[in-house]
Image (cartoon, rainbow, N blue to C red; front, top):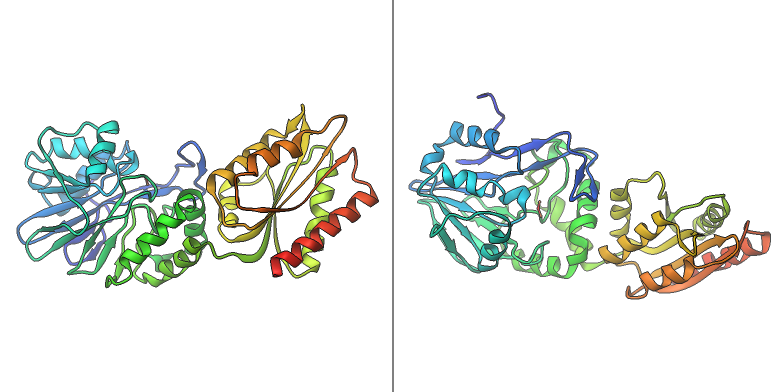
Length: 393
Ligand code: FEO
């Protein structure tokens, strides 16, 4: 095939990635309602050519065809590996087998991690560190170590002549739609969802990386998933808020209900909070996309978990939700757990154990036997009013 769309994002800088329109799950964990893209970039200097990252398994042949349309793969000089995860690094061997003089360029940590997952050609690796540069002839690649975004070895590459930052997963979004940020009106909610799913547990490292690039003159941000930002501020500004853990006066309610009692309790607290001026988002975990929940976690000030007791513990879906909250490390400051049981409780204790290591202050818990009675719902209202006061304070 020779009619691929290969945007030239700046003079002699080409997007040569792949769009995965129909992929619906990532890491066997993250739903992808709009598929995703694996972005790779070819930079041609006067003397040398460099490829920044590769593509997911299954897209190698398409990738090779694209590279040969804008260059000659056999003559590739450098393969820059910003990140070792297979969606960007799995085609290293495929590409290097077809470009006999190419050299893999990555950090020391990058070599170690890449060696675990990929077969690296013997003696064809160049290790770089913070601030090192590579001269392509009229084009320079500068390397910025940005560890733990979201693997230990991650780095950014900067092209000063065109003021382009290639930050791999950082600033990314899972969508196959669009080429540039201006193509997607709903891009920031998608980027926020991606941040919640992938970057939020490493928010502090993200803040450090933002400090590192603060003085860089950036005209274009070219991440490894989703559209390329011609307007870098559109994503840098929200990232500043998200990595700082800034929250909104917003409560996220996630719940499961078997016979309606827990649902009545979370409905009551939702109405109370709304009356008190709190923004509320409610997700029934039996029908919700967990990516939407991750997006709301990014800036919710409070989390309310509702779960019935099943076989002496939490409902399995609520257990999954609570575990995700623990793992994603959201910045929420306040928590409430509500639930119901038939003949023996247990869900509240288990939820408390899971959420204990978080920094959330537990404002209230309530577990009712059977249906929630009027008195129970009054107690829920009281918890809601106390929570609203704390959130405003
Ligand atoms: Fe898109 Fe962490 O790989």
